[in-house]
Every structure is written in C-alpha cells, then in structure tokens.
Image (tube, rainbow, N blue to C red; front, top):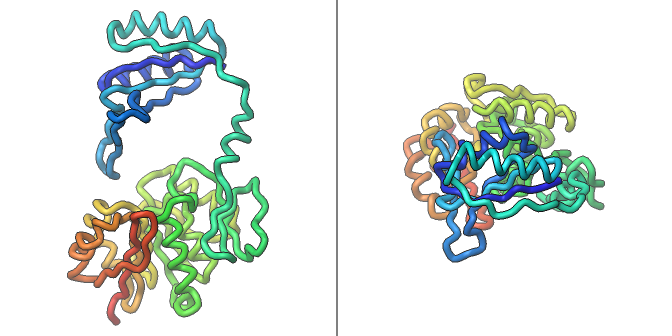
Amino acid sequence: MFELVLHTHAEYVEPISQTLLEELGALSVSVEDANAAMPTEAALFGEPGMRAPEGWPRSALSALFVDEASATDAATLLRAEHPSSFVLKSIHALPDEDWVRLTQSQFAPVEITPQFWIVPSWHEPPAGASLVIRLDPGMAFGTGTHATTRMCLRWIVQHAAARSASWTRVLDYGCGSGILAIGAALHGGRDIDAVDIDPAAIETTRANAKANGVRLNAALPQAAQGAYPLVLANILATPLKLLAPLLCERVAQGGDLVLAGILERQADELARAYASSCDLQVGDTEEGWVLMSARRAR
C-alpha cells in the first residue's frame, strides 16, 4: 500500500478528492488540517442541517493506492488536471497492518454502570456485566464512547425501576445507532419509535436492534406520531432549540423529556427555548456536556 500526500487550499479539496477517487484509482482519500499540532491548528465543525466546510484553509490530503506506480501516475495526472493547486509532499510505502485488528483495538467495552455495559462484538463482556448492549462502530453516531450517550443511558438506568411501567411508548428522536432506543427497550420500554433524518442511521438502528434481540420501529421522523411517556433526543443544541415545539408536543402528560448534546454554557439557552412548555433542569454533567430533563405536568 502506498500513500500520496499533498497540501492544498480548502477550495481545491473537493475537486482534487473527486479526481483522485473517480478518475485516478485512489482506494480512499482523507483530509486533515495541514497545521495539525501547530499553534495555527484550527477547529472545523458544522451543525446538523448546515453545510460543513470541506477543508481547512491549509489542508493535507492523503490518498491510498495499491502500488507505487499507481500513486506516482496519479500525482502526474493530477498536476496536469489541477495545475498550481497543490504541493506534493510525499509518496511513500505504508507498513503492512492488520487494519481490522487495528480498528477493533481502538474500541473497548464502555461502562454505563457496573452492571450495564456497551460491548463491541469482538469483546467478551466484562466480569459483573449482567446487561449488555452489543454495538460495533458504524456509520451512525452513538457507540457509547461519547459523554452525551453515556449520560442518556445512565438516566434510563436510574429511572427505570420507578418509571418503566409507564414507558408504554418511547421515542428516540435522532436515533443515530439506535443505542438509546435499545437501552430503553432493555430497561422495560415498549412500542419504541427510533427516528432519524439519515437513512444510514435507520438501517444501522435496525441492524443493532436485531443484534440485541430488541423490537423497535426505525423510520424517518414523520413516523413519530402522538404522545410518548418517554422522549429522548441526543442531538445538538441548535437543532434541539428548533425542535422545542415538536418535542414538547410529543411528551405525554406526566411523561419525561430527556435532552443531550448540550454544552454546559448552552444550558440556560435551552431552558429558555423550552420554558413555555417544559421546565428543563440539568440532571447530569460530564466532560463539559450536560443532560437536561423535564416532566410534563399531568
């Protein structure tokens, strides 16, 4: 395996990547900040519903090829098609790796409580784990490694004994991998709707539910209808604010609304956005993130 590395500006990232993948035989193309680990390193992110930037002002592109000749030819042809648009940094061999084993080694079991764990399929459950969600990294958000996911699952565990009898319907809005819906099902939730705008998330949720022996309905958001005694939404603050009327409407009288994906500094802003219908309170904090919840009056 050979890697071609070049530096370019943000405006050229997409056309060069397309040329490498569609015309020049690259197996993959990755993009990162060419100034990574330097004082000029820049954060790059976007909110759901907004077009994310395609590259850093100074971007490093890495393209993989099966052999040195393919990488060298690609660099030559790329120069002809995109003259003066990039600087070639290197073409070099990569050491042979067991990529599957290397990827798997990065994902270990995640503890929610001493008894409840998220465990990749290639791991044995830890000693003492009496309840396990089997979940492998996939195309959708939610492997249990992020603080917001862990907080939501902890909330489910902490409240299941007292409230799961009332969880006759559960809504996981923005389900990602389906991990919250599965967690609710394993703690007594029934008639579960897991919805997302991303078709890949819907397919991932269905596969994960099947792997865990859980029955749920994974679909697009319009499938969520009526009121639910438990509504979960682990997204981000901006879409959560926009969704405030819809999510509050979906909470049944006496039911619970649980929100995550909120930074500590955004808590007051979210509380104001929901104030007309729900009295949101911070219920958990971890790594600069908060979980907020509210019970709807009967």
